[in-house]
Length: 337
Image (cartoon, rainbow, N blue to C red; front, side, top):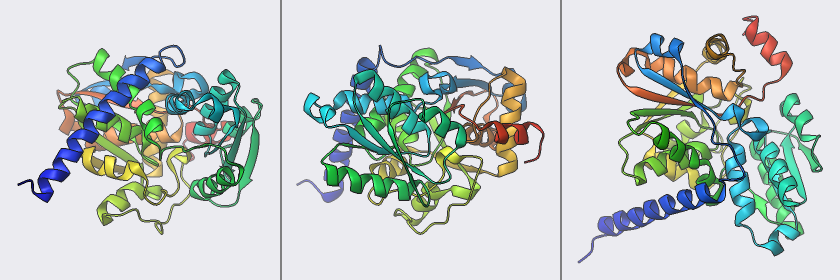
């Protein structure tokens, strides 16, 4: 007789196997659409931690962030008839840029809803694409709500920033590249907002039978996923304050599929203060010359918080994006934050 727990475990195994296949399919589908970004050794971070630290430079991706992987995979998974209707999405910036780029490549019309405090740099880059932009009062979750309602009213596909298995599979292709370049990897640090990047990466690593330890990183001022996991449910009422990590800020949709994937597959969580994020941004620039955005700084700050406990390990940090406002960058470089 099969018990309830055995049935749950069987379903989980089936889900993990399906995720593995979906990420592998996405890797094949995206081969000619996205860059396999560099994985570079960081001497400074290695000295600071005693680990062998590698940076996965998604800031060098087309559009400047990892988001292009999921957005392109989602649009390529739509039927010709669905693409002909045009798509609607919501974004604090990077996902919108990714959808705009993918839509332009595939000749698909797109409408993008943004929170009113969206990054000016990301907004300027979006205006270079032939897309319709809609500003929404409130945070990223408010923009998502408005976009979903609009998509439903118009009968158009909605392209979620994270709450979609095709988006998650696309982001998971980062893990494919990590294992190909560093098969003996011990740990991966990645920033978590809605959870698409870490859900895709961690679930793939676990499904592939890898022993890689996954560490989810969030800014202290907007650690909604961590608060939700601690509560055992998505905490819609959790406050999200302004943060350098604008790309990961805001709430999470109710019933987001990323919640359970992160809860099951992320091994440890760490948060970072605004000062730690700014310090991490400066450190990476001094070490490599790479200008990274606040969300990427969160993962580096998470690595530094773990410090010498990583000594001797091979560690990758996903530098999720490099789209940072000039004014913010100057404040960070002048140590005003």
